[in-house]
Image (cartoon, rainbow over all chains, first blue to last red; front, side):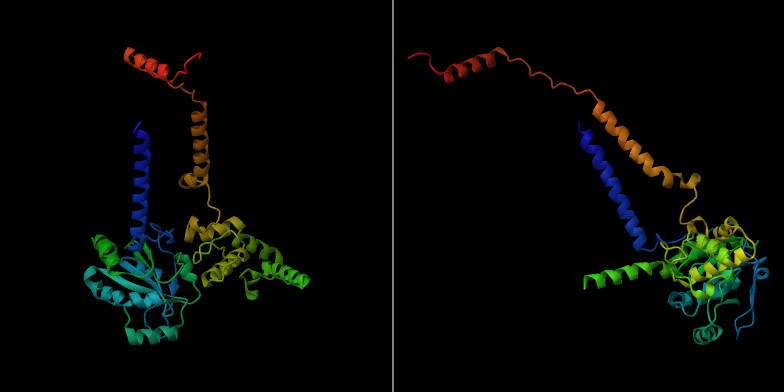
Length: 184
Length: 160
């Protein structure tokens, strides 16, 4: 007889716990309900060859990804979250040599002169930059906004993608551990 | 006044189809190919706004994908091949109508299963034979006596 009350009460508590968990996870940024999983995880990076934007020396092509662990950051000067994550990229750039990876940029739907002006002031974290003004390569990477960050292993296979601005927590909890693993 | 209002509303609604986001410079010269492109882009989700098709969306990414689909068709791709090209890059999520496969069974059939479960539950509930409420225990001698006394008290006296 008491089961009639215990079972619904238990289910209700379970439901409540689920809601609280989801709310906390969304609030803390751990879970983004509108994030789209990348279709390219575990697949080879697409073939491409992009020139450097005007004022930069090294362009970016698929050949540059072979034999090295790569962080590829999709960014644009018109994108405010890209400005927010920029200091973290400068930090990452300092770790590149010791960490055994290269940090490269895909300048997405941007104008060369705007980018040059921004980086002249803020600094350039990237060893190479590919200019993709018409989103040709962006589409091949499944990019749907800026910023996005990909991690590509030595065999030029995409192992990780994060859509949104990088955060200290993300670097600490996901990106640095993954880089350490790939370095081996 | 009323007629004028109706006319205005009718004109607004008549113009709705023109609200598709497609810009004149995107339209292909071949009307048959253009019709196919429209058909395809209506099925593809804009990943920026997430609840609009790329045919409807004004987002720059949607425009890029519209142009890409048209380019694939011009290159001789069939409709399915053009859709597969986009899905290979953006995943099943770009399809406004998700494909039926093992990972989407819950999505497609879940509501029907829940409904069926409810019907079965109700049916079992209704069909269960009603248990007649147990007859109250017979009175013990003491209670009989009490009852008799009470009844005796309240009984109207017969006759004058």
